[in-house]
Image (cartoon, rainbow, N blue to C red; front, side, top):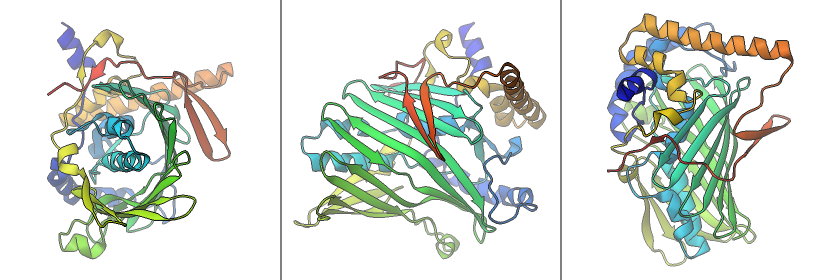
Length: 385
């Protein structure tokens, strides 16, 4: 009976991994005309934040799940825990760089995750890592994430919101917000910015992370600056996979460079000691983002009604079975429920208050602080190998 309820109420989609690249290419070639047809009346420079896609162009997962997967879904060693296990400050920063690179995942062009509804959550555990994500704003869409590592006493907080702009031949997505990692045992805080995303339509379709992001720790006087290159037009036409990453690790106060960082985030990334010339592989994508497994239900009774996989279960079933009429009805039902909740709040005059985060808005910036000091164990878990 419990298994039947699980199947009926929860759809747990497989995370996007390196081996899904071929499916991504097929989706791109099959879906490019439909995508362009949706944009035929959209002017270059238009904000696409609230742009709605038909179910045929949806992945069977919410954007919240995509965020959570960046942290709880990995196939190799516990890279998050490594950040605190290193003895020297420079080694810890290198580990933080490695972990940041590991959060970059392939983007399936031609298919988009669902836009999360207000109050939607996603709560998953993997080993000693517990992750909780909540949609704290709908207009604009803002997602907040809190992750804690039980063994190594690590605290990670994110707040994300996109600003997608249509540029004619591509969509330029600026990722705004804040990322922070606290190594509590080391009394160190690492502040991080985020790269953007470029989705190209012509001359060859594709989507990739691009731009600059930084990692800085004031306690150790160390920082890293990294730059991601998306696939070039000519490179895509020749079948090349760029996804290159270049950067450096330096002392903040003196500017003295300590390491060169280079490689490809979907293959391997190297660090070169500027003083000694020593080379080391700091990241291997094949070990970390291959063979990824979806969560399983450990305790159905503890799954929140706001859990992403429950909110969108009917729509995901329709998408997976290609039952588009069922998918459209399910998507409409979720949207109508959200509109009804908004009407009720407006009628009562009660503002929306997120359950798991304290949210403060400073102009266009959003500051999301977890209400709990640690994330509890989740009813959804990544199974052990």
